[in-house]
Image 1 (spheres, rainbow, N blue to C red):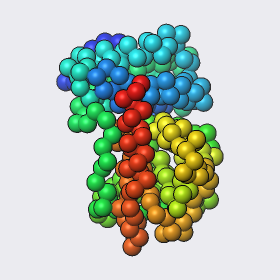
Image 2 (cartoon, rainbow, N blue to C red; image 1 turned 90 degrees about the vertical axis):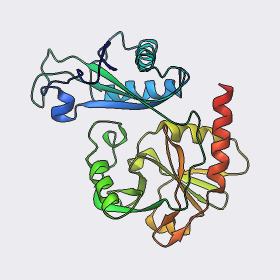
Image 3 (spheres, rainbow, N blue to C red; image 1 turned 180 degrees about the vertical axis):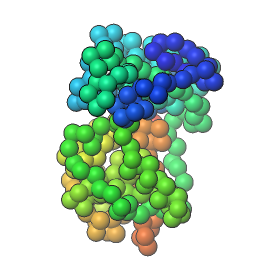
Length: 283
């Protein structure tokens, strides 16, 4: 079942008009959420990122778009798909409705749809990584700015980068900004480990303001065993690192096994996953 503006509709009957601005112009935002046994992981962070993104895109936020309202709609949809007692991946899509060209009509109103699918794991596993191979994606670059950090429907680099990865036998690619700094993977934020230093690109470099990125930084900020840095990463540093890992809300942490001829371990990533799962069990 699909939730379109509060109405539960079968997947076969769920349709979006060709006049929808999200379809026509990418005038839309989305959040990908993990729901386990009726608990939406990190929902407050997802909600406030969504509200901030809507303001940046100058969407008129409906008065009823409270955190409680959207949580209720998400769980209603999860329940309608018989996944309230299981693990689910949820995509909450927000668009500006229909009407207008680049300039929306005055009558254009914000709408939403919610799509749910099954997830196999309730918590975050230590994923296999030895054969997880990445390389740089250098056909196009991300320009740093407020728009680059949004989780919007404008994902051309991620789409063609994923095609490039498949064509070249890669599991993922690392994205560069226009300053030639490495900012993220195609589907998540990037962390680099060298000795006791854990480094991730700053938001100013153009990476996504990731919810899992925020969780990991919070977990590590008072840990005396590590030095945490939000600083630019050059391609040269990738070859010198001990570990590289990718983070997002669905997977948690995906360690990278190989970049070109350099191979990595996943010692610290595995430790962080354990810390993350402990936190989730306590909340």
